[in-house]
Image 1: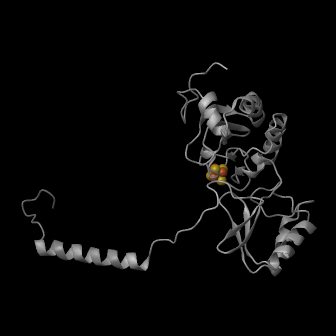
Image 2: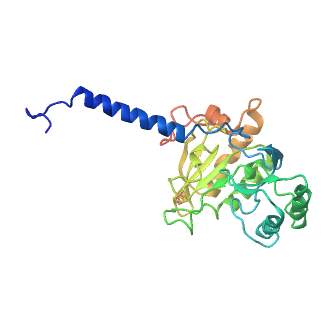
Image 3: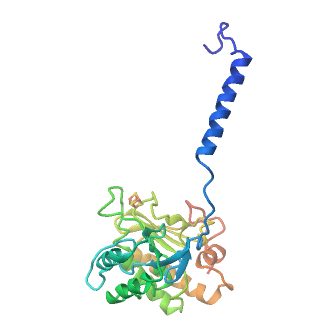
Length: 279
Ligand code: SF4
């Protein structure tokens, strides 16, 4: 009993034996689970969509779904599932789903590669990666109707959201600039919206908190820009900011870095929009 006069410390030899046992099992665990081997990573955030990269000694074909980001389905004019089934019949490597919601056809041999590319071309999927920089970097969670925690649409809202922002980017010559946009149906943030240069977090039907200013490489979180807006409202709020970004950005400056430097008030935080700054 703690504080009892009857308490007596274990003998010194007992402690020594315990330490030896712990040390023994620590060594055994270290030998059973050696450190993970060193892997070369291709890019920090963005998969090298559209490129044939070499990983683990074999060819890799990375695919980005244009309409159905993160989904393998059959839709009119977009038979991705059919094409992948045909590829699976000849492919001896792997299919890997990446954390950026891309699909990697990995371990492609030199003999298989032209056949796989021919299958993609036959189904009109060989231009999948020729998309806007915004679309290639977009992520969403499933939200409605799959997730019972969703407060707003996410996956189903993303295609229309991208179209609206792409129109603004086109107006400003930014179609191929890599800008990360992420949307989730609730603050749990399963698609990592707090690391998006543009982040939407669902609060209620068609209402989102809008975050700006994360660093593209994921080393800085974004900050609150609007506590509640619609997608259309966000497009109108960001239209002049995107225009300023096109005209005023520094060499090599990402959209998130520009928002952090120029747009967001100094006292804006993750929870507060801060004191408005003069345009
Ligand atoms: S972010 Fe929320 S709505 Fe989206 S999948 Fe996660 S828990 Fe569900």
